[in-house]
Length: 308
Image (cartoon, rainbow, N blue to C red; front, side, top):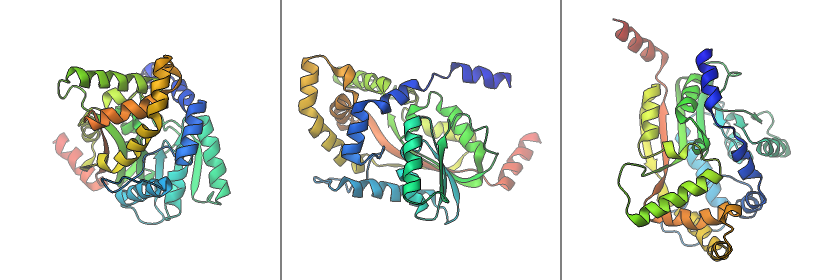
């Protein structure tokens, strides 16, 4: 108990995450461009015309559904549900979803959307912190997933440990997240400039976990927690068409806000320009990592071997 209190004490407050999503820039931008969805879409590499954007967003959600590899009737945790679009999409495919988020507005909008679509029997959206899932029993879910939310975590290892705890033996976990070069290679001066811009942007969007998610870090965290059959797949080229569109839309406004030194008030505009430049030069990638929690028999056998 003491250890847990100490751990909770140093976790930063989530106010900056909520503040980012509550800004008028985020509200208008996400709604106007993505219909409120909070994740990237999936396109064939080299796509020039990404419209309609909604089709790409749904393709990414289909990709997630298939990567979970779960039958109809399974129960999963959406760890950072946003406005509930992913959870509802899975629900239509027969997956029951417990959807949690730390942003009050997201939870309210998700609940409204679930009710509007008549999916209350399949999706339960509520406030929740995936670092502290004390109200959920051990080995409860058939699957767990994040869709671009772990980079908000101030302690990814603690979050993954909690997800491991609530996942059934043999259950499947999937992360759709970013990683970056970090300290894995010394950057050139220009690369360093982009790295600093990216860190500056992410700090204003409550991206506590991004510094920890350098290349290979999440896989190491998963291995340390006991996950097996870890697989990774890069989808950078599949999200590039949307990033390119963000760059095109943001470029002229970005020049104007730089002229008047207003970057502090236009996080998404700066991100649209600098984020695409950083992506283009290999500073960050879009990755999918999936794994299994070992079956109970295998876990017990491993424990017996260690005792002996």
